[in-house]
Image (cartoon, rainbow, N blue to C red; front, side, top):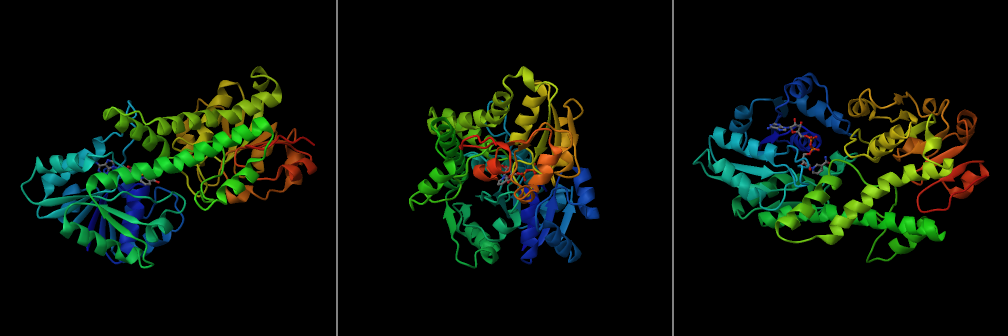
Amino acid sequence: MNVGVVGAGYVGLVAAACFAESGNDVICNDNDPQKVENLKKGIIPIYEPGLEELFRTNTAADRLTFTTDIAQTVHGSEVIFIAVGTPQDQDGSADLRYVLEVAALIGKHMNGPKIVVNKSTVPVHTADLVREEIAKHTDIAFDVVSNPEFLKEGSAIDDFMKPDRVVIGTDSVEAAEVMRELYAPFVRTNNPILVTDNKSAEVIKYAANAMLATKISFMNEVANLCEAVGADVNQVRKGVGADSRIGPNFLFPGVGYGGSCFPKDIRALVRTGKQHDMDLEIVSAVDRVNNNQKKRLVQKIIDQYGSAEAIRGKTFALWGLAFKPRTDDMREAPSVTVVRELAKLGAKVQAYDPEAVDVAKRIFGADIPITYCESSYEALEGADALIIVTEWNEFRRPNFNKLTATLKDPIIFDGRNLFEPATMRRLGFTYHSVGRKVVTP
Ligand code: NAD
């Protein structure tokens, strides 16, 4: 099949590579000339495990090509995916500017019947808006399919190749058939392809993300309660998750969720509710709880040193910048809140992240007192204490002797519960984690 993908970001690039890997001819379009130039030279703009290999094989086989030319993309494709960003607008809603821009361009360049697929996360009714936008520019028949994407950064290729489910929102039997054919190689283990109407498909994506974010904020609140009453959230988590109606996944407390999806999607859903005179109270609370959770780690640091003033002049080693492991994405990452709050208090940060340092440099610029280190141990040199915000595997089994020898004081603020408190006490650390008692040597 000839497939066009507009938007060469996390979703577009992964989708393009995976569709090419299953034998389709894929033309991937982006309006960022530098990005396309780099892709043509073989420079991949994001870090995603497994992407490079698919990229190399399929570009070498000419099944995957890149262009900034939207006319060429539309002309050469039977199915065109829109995978551009839908960032948060000022009022919290999803900004559909880029999606509708692409829809208009597709309309202008239509040269035959097409299936236009919304892969971007878009609020309910967007398929109608896309349809209207395309129809302004053409009389040629087309279908608009809502096909939300559920991949997770860090395991995006795997998720795309083996999805739990594929959601296809359309009222066209023919379009549904083409989409089934396109996705057939990825659901060979019989994971379902759910064909729904457009609106239901659009709601599924937001409801799924809201449910996942709810689990996280819920467990963060439970963790905070555990701290207050002296319980251990790890034991509580296991006890709660063993109930088959609840399940063990997504119950890990931490420093709050971040990333390019949950925060903005939760707010967009609240906004959609408002537009329909509904207060989505649970979803609103999930966002509030998360914002507070991101600041809680800094409060623990202040408490450790006795006052906000006592933080001035201190240096903290920071392990992890990305919003989660195996990605370089830092959009709404808890690390951003932690670094900015510490900067406000007059502290310096020495940060290490295996992938996200370049992204961090762009985010923090020169105004924030942050030094980027080449290794986790380098970040400890001359630091008063260690803060952990991302659970990269390489942080899970550090050489604790090196930690005690390098840090000025053996103090760790762990936002991801990587270590056992009892072990940390034995090793001589003051150890703050989430939802468990602070231990001191
Ligand atoms: P991204 O910012 O990484 O990529 C978007 C790309 O679109 C950029 O390269 C940008 O240059 C390009 N673009 C913007 N306007 C364009 C235009 N007019 N023509 C061509 N290209 C254009 O975004 P992303 O993370 O890939 O997300 C894309 C969509 O998928 C969003 O709606 C997001 O919510 C959704 N989504 C993201 C994830 C994820 O984990 N990142 C998962 C599921 C769904």
